[in-house]
Image (cartoon, rainbow, N blue to C red; front, side, top):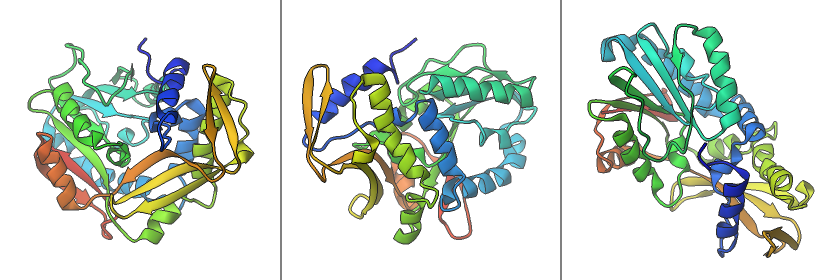
Length: 307
């Protein structure tokens, strides 16, 4: 099994990123089993409009799947999570479903649940770094439809979203399609509420990283010594999430010491927002063409179909 979201890769990447002036915990490490379940709670929070609007749009797209793509389809979902969204689109024309994710326990659990709802569907759960090129099995149907939903396209650092789209194109092959969920630029108050829900799930999701560090890396940190904060970066059109150290403290990894100052922020996520124009430009620069797109009445969120 590849070394993706494991204890050793977690430690290795923390040492690299904590050695920098601006400390970062790569967002993929949110998604151990507990973190994945916290994220599912975020998607159900009243302030988090993304999941709610996305499901509404997917219900509009679902009846058109057959007329758009025909029979004998393979659905490939990048960062599949709970597989709740793909259920809306599954029908008898879909013969294979490949959920790709870096959380092994969560993808196994969600695939087993999906099998109960769709016993004839051939489900091929694949534990991998879905941002990289993946060689697909030869026995799946030729018409491949990719999905990258939940606005995850905005979660890449250092313009890595372009690299992801290029790799997805290579993975899916010629004459393929890709649905991408895109969070659109909107009023900052709406964004602020979405990333600071009243149930405190966003805070729990981020602070779970401290729990994971303690459990897997024996760091002996205390959650109460950290606070979750988020802010809007106007220049980069993104929400940035952090865990803030409430006091001076020392972190030990592989016999190395890392000092955290009181008030120092560790970035845990970025969530970029797009306009129709900026996302279309990104898609084109990655070798894709926008075939269609759907959005809600308020234009908070959109799903693009690329080919």
